[in-house]
Image (cartoon, rainbow, N blue to C red; front, side, top):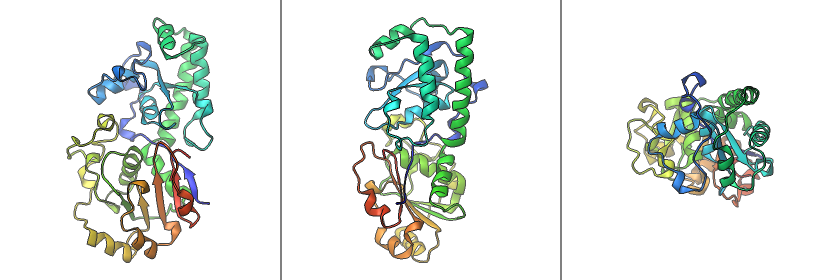
Length: 310
């Protein structure tokens, strides 16, 4: 059945090269997932620098295993200390470097020793300074993780993965349909990857304004817009699309494939798409935290379904 794992991703422009990072001065970043009192950063720059200046940053499963924080940490040359990652289902975060993270978790625990809870982790990490041997071991793992992030976890990489997995690599025109335009990490980041690769040959409809550098992001609240807003240049946008134009383009097979950025949040023109395209030219994305959707209804028909929390 044509269904596949998928993950969040990070725009290539958000990955900071090691030589441009600020000097590390903390063993662990101060932000604690789920503890709102530690969410103190007003700007993306401050938020990113909190990771760049730290060796490790805590992350963990919240509503879902996948989280944009994992990728933000890696993009800023910091290693996620991922609590309980060994319990993550095999196909959930199937593209994430779990084995490398488990290896770095072991190094973290070797340095700080046993702990009972997150509060104790921070107590143990308070005055830690890495020995040269630990620093060398840490940097070897970090270099592998950053390289992996650049190769497999960017928005562009994920768009390529979707095309390769669905056997649609040799295409030139895409229709990316959005049931809504509010912030949705999987939809927004994946769309950004396709727009980066295909530019105006990727028609998004309706337009997701907060992705573009010339648009207002005040309506975008998730994560203050960090990492997924203002990441595309205006010239890759196609502004003159209407329902009539898109429907006509679908009917004449102007597009090579049709992608639904989040089929839970709407499937515009779905009946027309089904009439005009074979199932293997239709792709649907599910980015929900808690997965209980009817993806088999679509995958059994031959539609390619990519699921975040598989």
